Every structure is written in C-alpha cells, then in structure tokens.
Length: 411
Image (cartoon, rainbow, N blue to C red):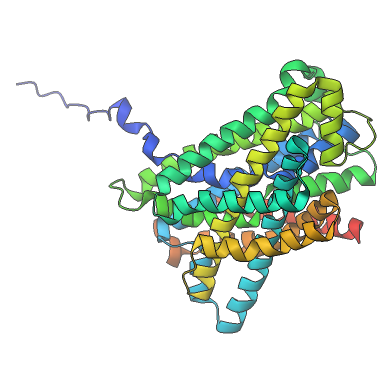
C-alpha cells in the first residue's frame, strides 16, 4: 500500500459547465435593451455623428452587465424580487409613492414599445398607426398568455427566438455596408462633438439601463429556477453566464444599429426619425434590407412589450401585495398608447418623451438595488465585496450624472 498522499479528485470538467436549462432569464430581461426606444437613439447617433459615440454603447453595455447581475443575485440569494423586498420594508406611504413612480416608468415603456410596433406595421403594410397599436396589443396578450399559464420555460424560449429575429433584422444591413474597422476603433475613444452629442449620448445611456428590466430580473430568476437542485453558488455562476451572453447579444444589436446608420445614413436629412431612417435604408441598401429592418422593429416591439407587461405585473404584486394577471395588466396599460396614437401624436416625439420618463426612473431602481446587495442581513455570505460596491456606486454616479445632463439640456 502506498504511503504517498493522494491528491483530491478534480471535479469533472462537464460538472463545471452551466446547464442549458439554467439559461434564459437574462435573455428575457435583455429584450428591454433592444426596444424601439433604443432603435431611435442608436439610429440618430449613427446618422448624425457617425462612429463618434460607439464608446457610449460599449460603456453602457458593460454597466448593464453589472446592474442586471446584481438584480439576479438579489433574487437568487433572497428568493424575492426587488419590488417584493421594498414592499416589505417600506412604510405604507413610501411604498405607494415608490409603486406610483415604478408604474409610470412601466407605462412609459409600454408606450414606446406599442408605438414602435405600430410604426413597424405602418412601414411594412401601410397600416394606420392606431390599428397597428391595436394589433400589437392583441398579439402581446397572446404571448403573455403563455407565461400566465405557468409555462415559464416556453415563454423564455419564445423570447429568445424573437431576440434572434431582432438580431438578424437589425444587423442584416451590415452585410452589405461593412463598417470600416479603423473608424470603429476610433469611435471607442471617449469624446464628444458639441453639446448636442452629449445630449444624444445621455439619451443612449438612459435608454440602455432600463428600470423595469432591473425590477424584473430579480423575479425572473426565481420563476425560472424554482425547484432546482443546484446550490446558490451554482445558480449565481449560471446567472453570470446567462447575463454576459444575453447582454452581449443585446449590445451587438445596439452597436450594429449605430454602425449601420454610420455607414449607410450619414448626413441624410430626416434620419433622426424611425420613418426617415427606414426610407433612407430602403433607398441606400435596397427594399430587402428595409424589410429586414422593419421586421426587426416589429419583433422588438412584440418581445419588449410582453416583457414590459411582465415587469409591470411583478411591480404591482411586490409593492401593492396583490396579484394581477399579466393579461389584466396588459389590458390596462395599452390604453395610454392607443389614445396617443388615436390623437395623431408624432410617434418619434412620443418615443423621446418616453425615454425621458425612463431616465427619471433609473435612480429609483439602481439605488435600492445596490443598497440591498450590500446589506448583510439580506445577502449573508453573498454580500457585495468592497470592490463590487465601489464599482456599483461609480456606475450609479455615471448614470445619474448623464441623465441629469439629459434633463438639463432638454428643459
């Protein structure tokens, strides 16, 4: 018998891999990062300033990875969503006030996504905007019915497929108009060109870090991972993989939109609106690419409006301590969007206003989130380290500062 000490057995390589069944929650949340508001902001940035603001999207995406992972971590460790935790810890009046601002943010999200879908149907089929809004509302109800039936994984799969269609639709034009790598690299250098470029950069950042996605992600992981045998540490590791891959896809779509506009639409009047950008794409890249773009916009609307309604339902459940079905929540929030479309409000202007409302809601989401993830009584051994906490608060300062600049410049 050998007296030599034996080495501990190494964990099999396969056991350290993230099971595919754990992938999905972040992809649902990531849909918020490629909604019609993002399309408008990124197309405007590329058409007006070329590659100048590529660095803004790269920075925003990196910050989003941290924010979304923190939300997922909170949900996995506590077994509760951020709205639920706040609903338990806030007094009656603060809780109702917090719910009111969160609900306004969710309604603004619904507004942008329904209008974006109505625009897509108008571009594809010349359907009047009001009828397009009604169609989007009804189809999103069908998507939500899947999740409301308790078929969480089926809902996640549908959203992932829609995200794939969005990616193809928005990036197809780059196959014809490849960006110049030197110009793209130059766009990674942080700089501005006049005060208007600061305004556009702030709106891009405000449209990227979506408050409702932060509230939702902490709930998504619990809905998706319920009943799993894995340990908390294993679920956190899986969530990191999920978040990185999901936001990598969303980031590529957003950057691709900017690059498409920078290569195909520079200095073309009217491309600061979605309709103008579509016409310019059709004229410069052909009808096929224009159809791909419109299909991407339509899919973006359908996926993001479903996710937005899901988030709104979770916000109401956590802060009002009442359960509302997704279908009921959807039926209520489509009304403002349909009213605006019926009144003939200019759709791009409505999208801009909705992004301003979203920017106001970002601090209300990230500050409580970061306070929770550094709270040892909530997180135990998974409390944020000092370095993680510093990174989080630097992100908060950057986001709040740029959104304050956005508001000051607009008003």
